[in-house]
Length: 250
Image (cartoon, rainbow, N blue to C red):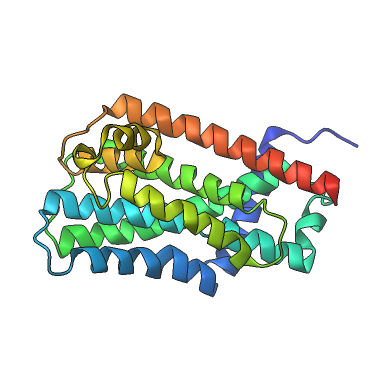
C-alpha cells in the first residue's frame, strides 16, 4: 500500500469538512447553540442598558465566534457514531487526525461565517468601525479554530446523542463568559478572577477583536496570538488522544 502524502491527507480533511458543512450546519442543535443562543444572550444582557459601542460590538462578535465554532463537532460526531459512519471513515483509509482536522475545519468555517454576520450587524446597525483589519482577521481565524477544536475535544465523550456532549460543553462555556470580560470587565474581577481571565482563551479572543475595532488590548496582540496558538495545539492533541483511547476501549 502506497504511502499517503500530506497533501492527500489535507484533501481528505477538506472533503470531510465540506460534507459536514452540507449536513450539519442546519441541524437544530447547531443552530440553537451556535446561532440562537449567543444572540439571545447578547440581547438579554444589553437591552435596556447603556453600554458603549466600543464594548458592545466586540462582546457580540466574540460571543458568536465562541458559540458557533464549538457547536458543529459536538453535533456531527455523536450522530456519526450512531450511524456507524465515524468508524467507516477510518477504514477509507483515513487517519483519525485527518478526520478530526476536517471536522475542526467545518466548525471553524461555521464560526467565521456567523461571526462575520455579527460583525456586519455591529458595523451597519451599531456604527462600529474596523481600524485594524489584520488584527481582527487573525483574531477571528485563530479563535474559530480554537473553539472548534474545543468542541471536537468534548465530542470525544462516548455517546451517540449530541445533547450528552452539549450539556457538559455548555457548563464550561457559560462560566467562561463571566471570567473573560464578556459580561464583566476584567478590571472589575477580583485578583483570582483576573488570573483565571488570563488563562481563558475567550479573553484573548475578545482582546484581539477589541483591538481590531479600535479599542485597547489589555494583554498585547502578540500575547493574545501566542495563547490562542497554544490552546489550538492543546485542544487538538487532547481531542485526538481522547478519541484514540475511546476507540481502543470499544
